[in-house]
Length: 339
Image 1 (cartoon, helix red, strand yellow):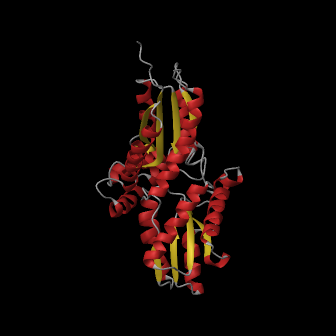
Image 2: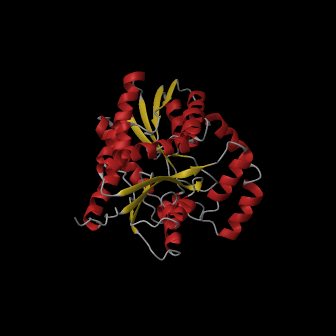
Image 3: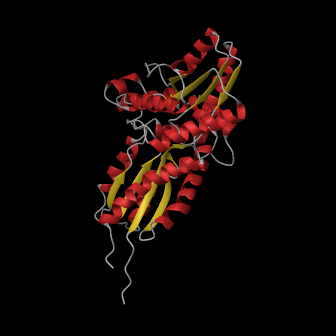
């Protein structure tokens, strides 16, 4: 009797990326790759490469490496958390979908494990279907789209293509909103409340939004839904955008400027979170938790606390698994095995 082969399904869980080490050389390699992507920097490539090679890469890596060193553990926090997220998902999904041979792997747009290499590995072991889950709750051409680009380039070289599904984003998914709100409740149950809750999202240049990038609007929608879930009044919370780079205008209000204004206006205590990040990283552990705390207190504020990203919280993992389950349920119809 011939055994029936299970359909092979690969799931790529992908985040932005991180240096391989918290050194000047490691950061320089990472920034060279990251900042060379025209999805990230839209300045004409010949002009930008001159700026990048002559004015940024010779100087910026030293400061960034020092910041990474302040939050580095055995490895980069983002990579450690991504690996653990994948491990937890791998422990759950195969049991729920025994009719598939599931392969769940981590990937990053920049750095390692690189999305290009992960896709190339699939070429050596053909699959029936591929599901891509970018860990960016709010779609942006600067974060999510590079994964689309990598996938598109890979498909051009493949003859035996799998079916492909992409989870575009999940900025208003009920389980995502509930997990964010519960993380605030849990933090306040242990540390008390604050005058203000600031939801700070990674920024994008204003011209990108003007050209149609929906990211900023999605961030505002997420924040509003979280505030509603928590029952906050309008004067108890706000949205802001962090991590500006270069001299052009970015989406406002700026996190650092808003915190300084609040301190000068007499706001004494602030709790800050960053719903755009599915894993804690340099921008949360150093910029939000340390740098902005110092700025707020220097301007007259008294109490400042960072609420961690969702990371490997059980409700976050439930959300990620739910997003994948929806795709796998659909595959049950198209890849069903005849008895």
